[in-house]
Image (cartoon, rainbow, N blue to C red):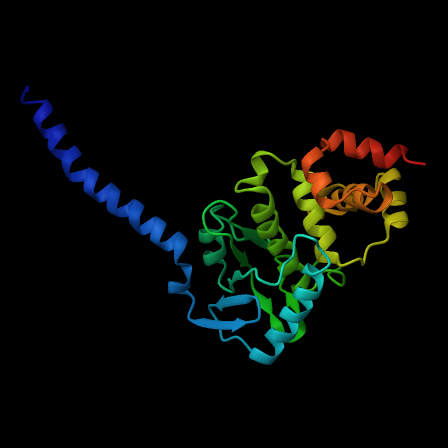
Length: 248
């Protein structure tokens, strides 16, 4: 070994253990986020952690409404358990969503833990506090966001880890919106908006999944497909959109 190589090898031997330790800490944080959430409520199918005190009575009412929404799905079963983390401090959402951003309403890890993380929330008013004060949140209370993200957990349990690798984005988000809205969705009105090119039906501009919901409702309610049939056939976004727009 030449003199020049020895220092490099020595540094590598020093760095390798540090890298292993760092990776271990990252994995430990991923699998045990409750270590940085001081407050915990266990109720029914749910374990809820928060970085602020959880008002038990109000939280239980929100979780009951979440169950009402989830139970409409054939993917639901009473023996499932769910882990939810309320990130009132957005750095936690940015960290545990693995997206390094706290801009979203919520995120679900369907790969490692099936943990759900939501942004700042108010159980007393059944409200997720949006990043922007603009927009109508009347059809999306906190229980909607919980049901939406927990539907992703049910999708991963029913159809395997990393469903995004096999299922189109419109289907995963459309079905989560379908379950989360619990039937509160005007198909005809949204179809009219879609045909008119309304901006709220463009999910990239609005951040809403109404067009994906339309497509999901078309197959489930208009065509009579089951959820498992829909996830087995997995129409492409172009195919689903064409079917909605050309249906009699």
